[in-house]
Length: 326
Image (tube, rainbow, N blue to C red; front, top):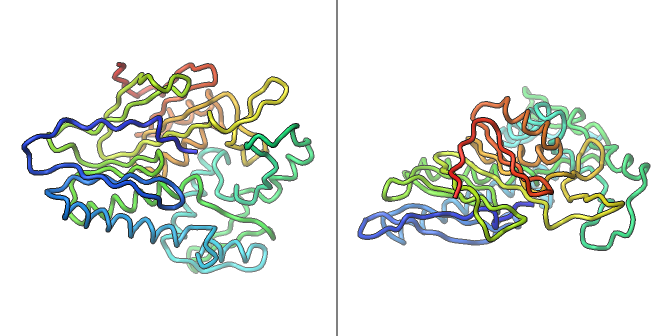
């Protein structure tokens, strides 16, 4: 779950200059979106924001597993039956998702949608599921069973009842697509914040970089770092609100698709990457991989940085990140 509370946007004071940032907040893809564009006036800004909204809505119709008419739903309906021909855009997205699955040793997996929902984080759970129930819950999960045929642009899920979903990558992808479209329309600066999946380009009207303030979830009123972001994305994933405790251990709502067990040990991950799609997927993956493995993997990737806060409030960061501490 993405938390806007960990991302506070800092604007410079703007006075007596032609261009200004214009912002609209609305609900898209079932989540809060904040769309900001730097424009000459509100009329121009509203036109461009409407363009971004239309693009995000288009992406949702393509990738939503809740929409029976989407190509994603068609893929799921035909699991174990036959391959489904899809648009190149969806095919390429699935292909990239499989690439991230390989990169993270399966910590990220779009076939997580096949998982049985045996864990409840609404306060109704009184005991842990059994080992057998947990093992059975992920029997149909596994990116290795997604078969792609590039020549035919088809996707086939090998197992009956298998499903794919883009909950851990979709909003980031939609933000990337909207950003790309706005840049092509001549918008030189802006921000698309999809419930914590923040995508920026250009600079503020006075030439300052956009900056993101990072807060520690264990002390939400205090900002510990201020980081510039230029033509890139930052995603903060947090699990400090949805969790259960059993036998003295804290289990959170982000579940390892390989084992069926919830992640533990981390309460917040912030990832910086060139695109929100990748940052989105990696933020979830770091939770699953854990502190040491997650940091080690991030440190091996070019142009990717992260900040991890563990369940003791300790802050860790990747080796190349520069933090302006406050």
